[in-house]
Image (cartoon, rainbow, N blue to C red; front, side):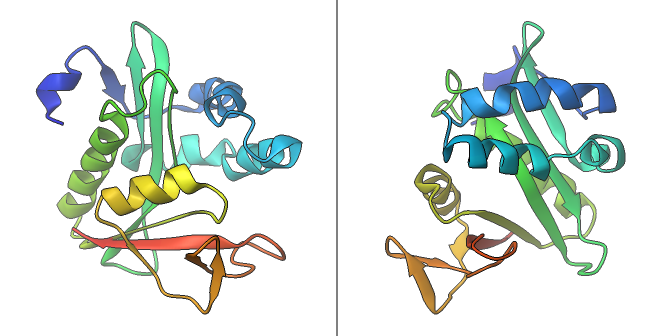
Length: 171
């Protein structure tokens, strides 16, 4: 999707005051994925610090003043050729319209502009929609000896029982 196709969007860096607005949409946008446990995990993955300390590399998308998408990412402090997409969300009404791809494109441009050539991301093992999106976006799934529903997963990646699919893409 081209920038022209999203002319009616306001895309900006987040501020700390965006934190509650993003938390409010998570359960609806994820359709209650993984129930109350998933709800708690999503909220814990997005503490206010991301909106305070990683704003330059993150994006909020609004249409007519309403939040329709966001991407929280950062440049790795330890791996100087890498950046990382920590969390991304697109409202159900906007999904499959290219907004997620557009936000990733902005992040890829930001990353390249800061000398990065690799972008990493993860998703939960059970999130098939995210898995399909990332593979369509050209991410490779990192190999692993474990599998979940035929997808390689990194066992206990984020702690006991928190298996993740790990993605990598050269930009």
